[in-house]
Amino acid sequence: MSTGAPAREGQTPRTRPKRRFSIVDPLVAVTEGRYWAYLLIAPSLVLVGAVVVYPVIDGILLSFREYRLNRPALGTPWIGLEHYRTMASDPIIRTALRNTLVWVTVGSISQFLLGLIAALALHRPLPGMALARILVLIPWLLPSVVSANMWRLMLDSRLGVVNDVLIRINLMDTPRAWFTSPDWALFEVLGVELWKNFAFFTLFIMAGLHAIPQELYDAASVDGSGAWRRFRHITVPLLMPVIVAAVILRVIGLFNSPDVLLILTGGVPGNATQTISLYGFQTAYLKFDFGYAASISVLALACLMAFTVVYVRVSGVTKE
Image (cartoon, rainbow, N blue to C red; front, side, top):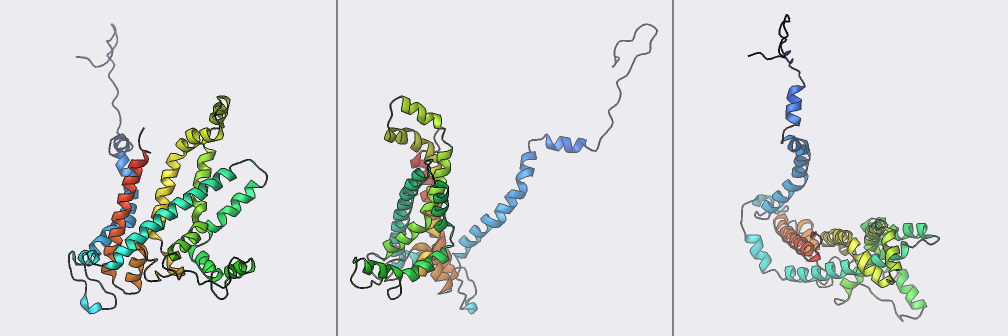
């Protein structure tokens, strides 16, 4: 059987030329395979594993060991669930969980509401709005340690400017020692946290507002919809993915950042401002009990994971 075209009378049959081997052929075969995508993301997976997965696993394993930095003779023996049994009977843990719930709930809701109001106001095309946007972001851009120490000096009972101003305008008769009332200390710190971080929501929501087409508002206005109906049926649904992402990030930030509480109160008076993250930090770096601190961190991780899963499901942002 001939492989080429049929030969005419008086002509020799033509044969198909042989294809030469190229060094590029193996590379083409690999790139066209289904495993090429995994090879491309392999470096990123290794980096994520080294930076994220390994520390988390190591911290979880540390919670099952006794590890006191000020008692190196003890070593790091395996003690199983002993730290978790201690947590179950630790009264400070229960107080810290209750305070953390108040801290995260009140902090995230108040910052979201003020950030939403600021974003809606700054989104208007009025003169001077560019400068106003920059001024609103300044508190958020300040490092937490700087802003907390600034407010600590401003609220000082002897030298603080806040007491001086309130006395001058006759709102107080005598200087007040802030952060000393067990009933109000946590909410006073939340006020500082509100001033510091409401711009986080403002920035996210303003970005979401810029992405909403103006034609939707124009069409709704032609149909006779008022400002409230446009906000309810256009702005809020289109902003929902942005709001969900911002709330999750802010809750994680509030849960894991004890810096403002550490500087302003240190957990006092009487553990009235003690939170899970602050208690874990103090256990590790004041008591040098890294094993128990690791178990507290595992509790915080479980709480954050549970919140994220429930919040995403309840918000319905993943529904098509």
